[in-house]
View (cartoon, rainbow, N blue to C red):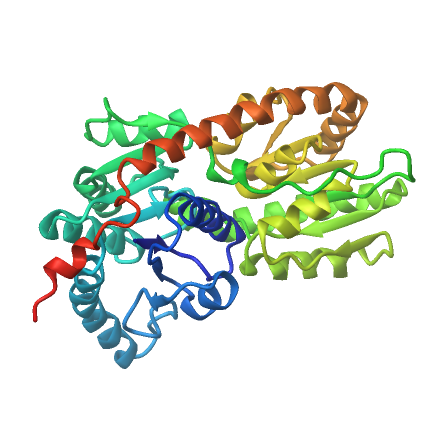
Length: 401
């Protein structure tokens, strides 16, 4: 069984989706061979104990192509990747794309990046008769025609599709894909192990503030610098206000690219009340949030972690998926737009959330088992696609002597 995605590349949400599916596969098909095609194969092998191969042949894929050699390398790499990916897909009985926003364009991306790679995986699966399953994925609309076309064809060619929310299924339907048999469950991270809650009888806990290198969506590239400055200024002012009130603040990230944002806030606020945590997994995030009084977060999986451990959360929303998640958890009124941060208004919303903290915790305690149950049903549906335990691998019958 093969797992495909941008794992091991610094985004803890992507890795959390990998862990959720990997844990299920190990329980449902013990002894099965599992490997990955991903962005950071060395990290994936070291952390999760499975063989992994590099997604891109050209090692400079993620560098800006400033020299002719880089441009040529990327162009050749796209052709080579088509054959490499097909060969990888062919070796498997099933390929699983575990969760993540792999069909989204809520953050900047290029059509020849992940949209192209996912299309190659799904096309190879269809041609080589290897089922490709998009399991609990996120999706969104886009104004980019190439991205939309590649996303539409990847979805059409997949043997199985399910989504983490109705917005994602609606977005794929709007692209012209027949989604009548596609199911909506919940984010795969809702089945991950939850750390014990903090001691409510002890001293007040910190306020966890999850920040992000936010510069708008794929359709807002022309405004990226403006949006990035506005976001950083708003979050800095908000953190400074919390510190002035005597509240300890713990800055969190969800991707390696977010670290300069925490450094900029620490330098600008310059207060012993504000510290930053090193988090390498969703488990690390949940441990920080479990002992917090309140969470204010931007990245989607920061919100998932806060809600999962039952800590009252306020979403600084950069995409509709965050608003939908908060509404599904009964916290729809506790959202603030990332594109138009008003630090004073955000502080007011924070205080309102804290006044309602006990009721919010009760609501989260009621909603969390519901979402975890949806993911368990997702895994039951996934089992039907997996080769039977103990069956001879089908890829061995397809190998040429």
